[in-house]
Amino acid sequence: MPTPQPGLDPWAVQKKIGTRDARYALGALLGPAPGGPLAWTLGVLPSMSVGGQLVDLKVYPDTPTPSLSLRVQAGQAVLVRPGQGPYVCTLDQLGRVTLDPADSSHARIDLIVAVITDERIGDPTTGFAVLPITGRPSATPQLPQVPDGALVLAEVTVGANVTQLTSGAIQDRRKGAAMRTGIHVPFPGDQAAAGGAFGGQVRFRNGGLEYWDATANLWKGTHRLETFEQTVIAETSGQTGVTPIATMVIPDPGYPYRLVVHGSAELTSRDCRADLQTRLFTPTGQIVGVGVGAFNAGAWVSTQVRATGVITGSHSLYLCGSRIYPESGTWGSAPHNGSLFALRIPA
Image (tube, rainbow, N blue to C red):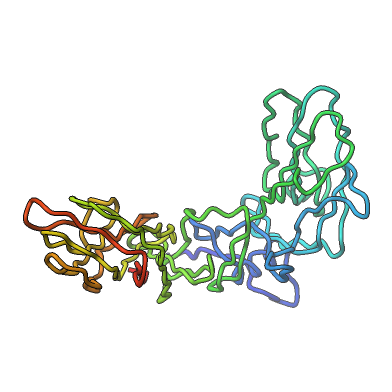
């Protein structure tokens, strides 16, 4: 005889539902974590920015006068206890927590955490709170242990004999949560290299959208184009080999990309031909494009517009002059009317 496998009661069966069932039903709307199914991302749910920074559950120095107390902005967070589904927790007003007095000899590191307790799973109480976890004073202070299921909001360095905590003592460690299939907005505590939960997951980072490629196991940029340009060209003379006359660093976007590169400069050659080259990685590295210069004359030289292969990470791009033939003669460059240009395209 076939046997069924019952699941959790769906929402509002017979007009009633258990608290655990309700959390799992709500979990269908919350952003998943890698390693699921039925795994949720712990983090703060974003709702407001001030000065370009997300402020939900952000920890601030005490006001109007700094003290050993800290303020916590109102907000909501997703917390998880094993086997219990996601808890959506709310701090509905500006909060205040007070730390233990400073040690007279050594500094310590305290944590400000959001934590859920539940009597149904053996905790002494049921509720949500933001509270400090006191570290151990030491010449080399270490982070205290994080309680199970807690979300770290901030690290606070409490120096010896300190009676006031300013913003310099507070390190933002909030991580972000999101709605399922919604766009994840990272908080300061999120790691750029952290993997996605499913193929097609989208996040907003560094001013653009990225999606999780579950086949390649990495984040990739969407169709976001960025330009980089260097217009400071070195003035040189008496050059005989490959010499860079402009350079710029392409920062790491966090996903694979290609560069479309072009360069131009005024070159003067004496008893030789000197070409202009765009190079990747090092001044003598991979040639991307070439511009043919004049023999024994001055000229404005423009390179080919060429694309690199797929690269990752941060790399340097160079605009170089190079004597081509014969093995004598010299060349130089003028500081006018030149540039090194790159267009970055997600791969």
